[in-house]
Image 1 (spheres, rainbow, N blue to C red):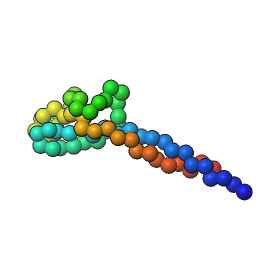
Image 2 (cartoon, rainbow, N blue to C red; image 1 turned 60 degrees about the vertical axis):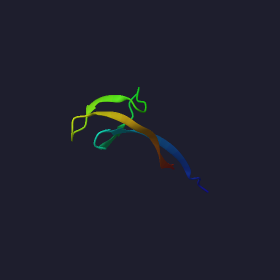
Image 3 (cartoon, one colour; image 1 turned 120 degrees about the vertical axis):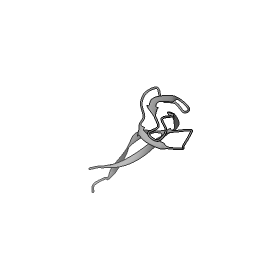
Image 4 (cartoon, rainbow, N blue to C red; image 1 turned 90 degrees about the horizontal axis):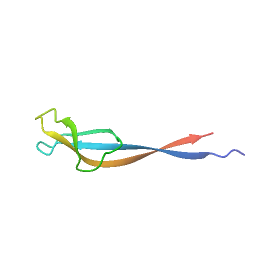
Length: 65
């Protein structure tokens, strides 16, 4: 009899948003990220600095043999 063991890995994402036009972008979480932080990137539509709008974690299941 074999056992199927499942382990989970996590991936943390950061959502960047332009407060002027609503443009959003997703990127990998970087150390030092926190909600409402102004980042060193501007909106490609209007040039407004982007802020961190949200941070979340995605769990991915992996099957081990």
